[in-house]
Image (cartoon, rainbow, N blue to C red):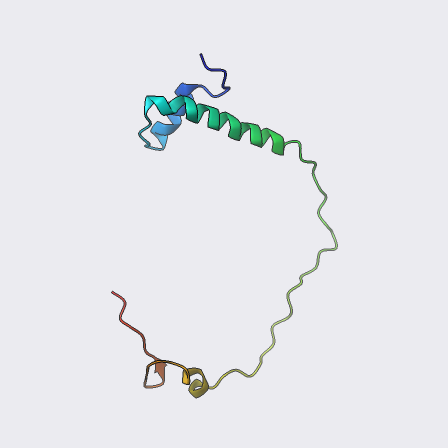
Length: 92
């Protein structure tokens, strides 16, 4: 009998659900790791709740229209262009 709070049969059941072939020698190791993970979740329950800041405001600036590059300026550094468009290698 294992000292782990996670039963080896539960590990096998989870492995079956996940369609993972699990060797018998790995079951106890995974049971201990699952127990560690559950312990971490219990630790999270000890973290105190924090109230949300009610005065939170949107920090994004409003959109504004600005002058951009012309098509010719945008294509100036392109390795290859075709009829006013960037040209790149075929992907397939």
